[in-house]
Image (cartoon, rainbow, N blue to C red):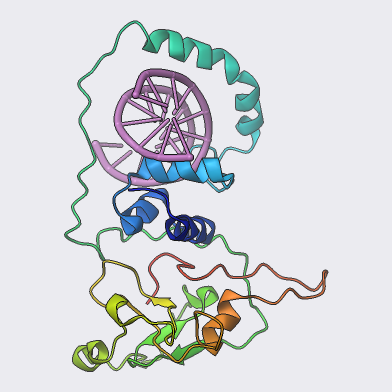
Length: 226
DNA sequence: CCCTGATTCGC
DNA sequence: GCGAATCAGG
Protein backbone atom coordinates (compact mmCIF):
# COMPACT_ATOMS: atom_id res chain seq x y z
CA UNK A 1 0.00 0.00 0.00
CA UNK A 2 1.14 3.51 -0.65
CA UNK A 3 0.63 6.60 1.37
CA UNK A 4 -2.07 8.49 -0.43
CA UNK A 5 -3.16 11.88 0.74
CA UNK A 6 -6.23 10.42 2.30
CA UNK A 7 -4.36 7.75 4.14
CA UNK A 8 -1.92 10.32 5.41
CA UNK A 9 -4.80 12.52 6.46
CA UNK A 10 -6.34 9.67 8.38
CA UNK A 11 -3.02 8.88 9.93
CA UNK A 12 -2.62 12.44 11.07
CA UNK A 13 -6.09 12.73 12.45
CA UNK A 14 -5.91 9.54 14.36
CA UNK A 15 -2.38 10.12 15.55
CA UNK A 16 -3.20 13.56 16.80
CA UNK A 17 -6.45 12.25 18.14
CA UNK A 18 -4.59 9.94 20.44
CA UNK A 19 -5.10 6.66 18.68
CA UNK A 20 -2.29 4.18 19.05
CA UNK A 21 -0.12 3.23 16.13
CA UNK A 22 -1.63 -0.21 16.19
CA UNK A 23 -5.12 1.14 15.93
CA UNK A 24 -4.15 3.42 13.11
CA UNK A 25 -2.44 0.66 11.24
CA UNK A 26 -5.45 -1.47 11.84
CA UNK A 27 -7.81 1.03 10.39
CA UNK A 28 -5.72 1.97 7.45
CA UNK A 29 -5.11 -1.62 6.62
CA UNK A 30 -2.25 -2.98 4.62
CA UNK A 31 0.32 -1.38 6.82
CA UNK A 32 2.08 -2.44 9.94
CA UNK A 33 2.24 -0.59 13.19
CA UNK A 34 5.85 0.21 12.45
CA UNK A 35 4.93 1.62 9.10
CA UNK A 36 2.52 3.98 10.76
CA UNK A 37 5.08 5.08 13.30
CA UNK A 38 7.71 5.49 10.66
CA UNK A 39 5.39 7.56 8.54
CA UNK A 40 4.36 9.61 11.51
CA UNK A 41 8.00 10.38 12.11
CA UNK A 42 8.58 11.43 8.58
CA UNK A 43 5.55 13.63 8.78
CA UNK A 44 7.11 15.29 11.75
CA UNK A 45 4.37 14.51 14.23
CA UNK A 46 6.18 12.25 16.57
CA UNK A 47 5.60 14.19 19.75
CA UNK A 48 3.04 12.21 21.65
CA UNK A 49 2.93 10.50 24.99
CA UNK A 50 4.62 7.20 24.59
CA UNK A 51 5.04 4.52 27.17
CA UNK A 52 8.71 4.28 26.62
CA UNK A 53 9.40 7.96 26.88
CA UNK A 54 7.00 8.65 29.65
CA UNK A 55 9.96 9.51 31.80
CA UNK A 56 10.40 13.21 32.12
CA UNK A 57 13.74 13.28 33.79
CA UNK A 58 15.31 10.44 31.95
CA UNK A 59 14.18 11.68 28.60
CA UNK A 60 16.76 14.40 28.59
CA UNK A 61 19.41 12.17 30.06
CA UNK A 62 18.64 9.48 27.57
CA UNK A 63 18.88 11.87 24.70
CA UNK A 64 22.30 12.94 25.76
CA UNK A 65 23.43 9.39 26.25
CA UNK A 66 21.78 8.11 23.15
CA UNK A 67 24.60 8.42 20.60
CA UNK A 68 26.98 6.19 22.47
CA UNK A 69 24.70 3.14 22.81
CA UNK A 70 23.58 3.66 19.28
CA UNK A 71 27.00 2.95 17.96
CA UNK A 72 27.22 -0.09 20.11
CA UNK A 73 23.93 -1.30 18.80
CA UNK A 74 24.92 -1.11 15.18
CA UNK A 75 28.20 -2.75 15.88
CA UNK A 76 26.56 -5.63 17.63
CA UNK A 77 23.95 -5.91 14.98
CA UNK A 78 26.20 -6.21 12.00
CA UNK A 79 28.34 -9.21 12.81
CA UNK A 80 25.82 -11.69 14.04
CA UNK A 81 22.11 -12.02 13.71
CA UNK A 82 20.40 -14.05 16.36
CA UNK A 83 17.55 -14.78 13.99
CA UNK A 84 14.61 -16.73 15.31
CA UNK A 85 12.14 -14.00 15.95
CA UNK A 86 8.54 -15.00 16.43
CA UNK A 87 6.53 -12.82 14.14
CA UNK A 88 3.80 -11.22 16.14
CA UNK A 89 2.17 -9.80 13.12
CA UNK A 90 -0.97 -11.75 12.70
CA UNK A 91 -3.41 -9.89 14.86
CA UNK A 92 -6.66 -11.70 14.89
CA UNK A 93 -9.19 -9.31 13.43
CA UNK A 94 -11.89 -11.53 14.79
CA UNK A 95 -12.85 -9.39 17.72
CA UNK A 96 -12.46 -6.14 15.95
CA UNK A 97 -14.56 -4.18 18.34
CA UNK A 98 -14.02 -5.78 21.66
CA UNK A 99 -10.46 -6.93 21.34
CA UNK A 100 -8.70 -3.69 22.00
CA UNK A 101 -10.77 -2.91 24.99
CA UNK A 102 -8.03 -0.85 26.48
CA UNK A 103 -8.93 2.60 25.40
CA UNK A 104 -6.03 5.00 25.57
CA UNK A 105 -6.91 7.72 27.95
CA UNK A 106 -7.91 10.86 26.24
CA UNK A 107 -5.04 13.32 26.56
CA UNK A 108 -7.22 16.21 25.61
CA UNK A 109 -7.34 18.70 28.43
CA UNK A 110 -11.04 19.18 28.93
CA UNK A 111 -11.76 20.83 25.62
CA UNK A 112 -15.21 22.23 26.12
CA UNK A 113 -15.98 22.85 29.74
CA UNK A 114 -18.51 25.57 29.18
CA UNK A 115 -20.18 24.48 26.03
CA UNK A 116 -23.33 22.43 26.02
CA UNK A 117 -22.76 18.84 25.20
CA UNK A 118 -22.92 18.07 21.57
CA UNK A 119 -25.13 15.10 21.31
CA UNK A 120 -27.18 14.58 18.28
CA UNK A 121 -28.92 11.89 16.42
CA UNK A 122 -27.89 11.15 12.90
CA UNK A 123 -29.89 9.99 9.98
CA UNK A 124 -29.81 6.39 11.03
CA UNK A 125 -30.95 7.04 14.53
CA UNK A 126 -27.58 6.48 16.10
CA UNK A 127 -26.14 8.58 18.82
CA UNK A 128 -23.19 10.73 18.16
CA UNK A 129 -21.10 12.54 20.67
CA UNK A 130 -18.47 15.17 20.62
CA UNK A 131 -14.96 13.97 21.37
CA UNK A 132 -14.99 15.67 24.69
CA UNK A 133 -17.91 13.61 25.75
CA UNK A 134 -16.36 10.28 25.11
CA UNK A 135 -15.70 9.38 28.66
CA UNK A 136 -18.81 11.05 29.90
CA UNK A 137 -19.01 9.71 33.39
CA UNK A 138 -22.46 8.58 34.23
CA UNK A 139 -21.71 6.86 37.50
CA UNK A 140 -24.77 8.19 39.32
CA UNK A 141 -26.96 5.67 37.67
CA UNK A 142 -29.48 7.53 35.64
CA UNK A 143 -31.40 4.62 34.25
CA UNK A 144 -31.72 6.14 30.90
CA UNK A 145 -31.20 4.46 27.62
CA UNK A 146 -29.60 6.67 25.07
CA UNK A 147 -29.78 4.39 22.10
CA UNK A 148 -32.95 2.88 20.79
CA UNK A 149 -31.14 -0.34 20.06
CA UNK A 150 -32.74 -0.96 16.77
CA UNK A 151 -30.09 -2.58 14.65
CA UNK A 152 -32.35 -3.23 11.76
CA UNK A 153 -33.54 0.31 11.42
CA UNK A 154 -30.04 1.44 12.15
CA UNK A 155 -28.50 -0.28 9.23
CA UNK A 156 -31.43 0.54 7.04
CA UNK A 157 -30.48 3.92 5.68
CA UNK A 158 -26.80 3.98 6.28
CA UNK A 159 -24.67 5.76 3.80
CA UNK A 160 -22.06 3.29 2.73
CA UNK A 161 -18.90 3.96 0.84
CA UNK A 162 -20.73 3.14 -2.32
CA UNK A 163 -23.41 5.65 -1.60
CA UNK A 164 -21.01 8.51 -1.47
CA UNK A 165 -21.40 11.26 -3.98
CA UNK A 166 -20.57 14.90 -4.05
CA UNK A 167 -24.09 15.61 -2.91
CA UNK A 168 -23.68 13.77 0.29
CA UNK A 169 -21.79 14.40 3.48
CA UNK A 170 -18.70 12.25 3.61
CA UNK A 171 -18.17 12.55 7.33
CA UNK A 172 -17.19 9.12 8.61
CA UNK A 173 -19.30 7.62 11.32
CA UNK A 174 -17.73 4.87 13.28
CA UNK A 175 -14.66 3.10 12.05
CA UNK A 176 -13.81 1.44 8.78
CA UNK A 177 -14.07 -2.28 8.92
CA UNK A 178 -16.69 -2.31 11.57
CA UNK A 179 -20.09 -3.59 10.66
CA UNK A 180 -21.88 -0.32 11.08
CA UNK A 181 -19.28 1.95 9.63
CA UNK A 182 -20.90 4.43 7.36
CA UNK A 183 -20.96 8.05 6.40
CA UNK A 184 -23.12 10.93 7.50
CA UNK A 185 -25.07 11.11 4.30
CA UNK A 186 -26.71 14.43 4.92
CA UNK A 187 -26.99 16.90 2.12
CA UNK A 188 -23.68 18.65 1.70
CA UNK A 189 -22.94 22.22 2.40
CA UNK A 190 -22.58 23.41 -1.21
CA UNK A 191 -18.93 23.58 -2.10
CA UNK A 192 -17.86 21.33 0.72
CA UNK A 193 -17.56 17.61 1.14
CA UNK A 194 -19.52 17.70 4.36
CA UNK A 195 -22.92 18.81 5.49
CA UNK A 196 -23.26 22.10 7.29
CA UNK A 197 -22.95 20.55 10.69
CA UNK A 198 -19.82 18.62 9.87
CA UNK A 199 -18.30 21.52 8.05
CA UNK A 200 -18.42 23.21 11.39
CA UNK A 201 -16.48 20.32 12.77
CA UNK A 202 -14.04 19.99 9.94
CA UNK A 203 -13.28 23.62 9.51
CA UNK A 204 -12.80 25.07 12.93
CA UNK A 205 -12.94 28.82 12.82
CA UNK A 206 -9.83 30.44 14.10
CA UNK A 207 -10.89 32.52 17.03
CA UNK A 208 -9.01 35.67 17.86
CA UNK A 209 -5.79 34.59 19.43
CA UNK A 210 -5.85 34.45 23.12
CA UNK A 211 -9.40 33.21 23.15
CA UNK A 212 -8.53 29.83 21.75
CA UNK A 213 -8.87 26.48 23.31
CA UNK A 214 -7.45 23.17 22.19
CA UNK A 215 -9.78 22.10 19.42
CA UNK A 216 -11.07 18.57 19.29
CA UNK A 217 -9.39 16.78 16.45
CA UNK A 218 -11.90 15.17 14.19
CA UNK A 219 -12.99 12.86 12.77
CA UNK A 220 -11.52 9.75 14.26
CA UNK A 221 -11.19 12.06 17.18
CA UNK A 222 -11.02 9.47 19.80
CA UNK A 223 -10.53 5.81 20.00
CA UNK A 224 -13.68 3.94 19.26
CA UNK A 225 -16.49 6.30 19.70
CA UNK A 226 -20.01 5.31 18.95
C1' DC B 1 4.30 -12.27 28.34
C1' DC B 2 1.59 -8.38 26.41
C1' DC B 3 1.45 -3.62 24.97
C1' DT B 4 3.42 1.01 23.55
C1' DG B 5 6.38 4.46 20.64
C1' DA B 6 11.43 5.45 18.98
C1' DT B 7 15.14 4.54 16.26
C1' DT B 8 18.07 2.53 12.93
C1' DC B 9 19.17 1.10 8.48
C1' DG B 10 18.80 -1.80 4.24
C1' DC B 11 16.10 -1.41 0.53
C1' DG C 1 10.50 7.46 1.28
C1' DC C 2 9.37 3.14 3.14
C1' DG C 3 9.03 -0.27 6.82
C1' DA C 4 11.06 -4.52 9.21
C1' DA C 5 14.04 -5.19 12.86
C1' DT C 6 15.25 -3.73 16.89
C1' DC C 7 15.35 -1.18 21.18
C1' DA C 8 13.34 0.18 25.45
C1' DG C 9 9.79 1.43 28.91
C1' DG C 10 5.12 0.21 31.07
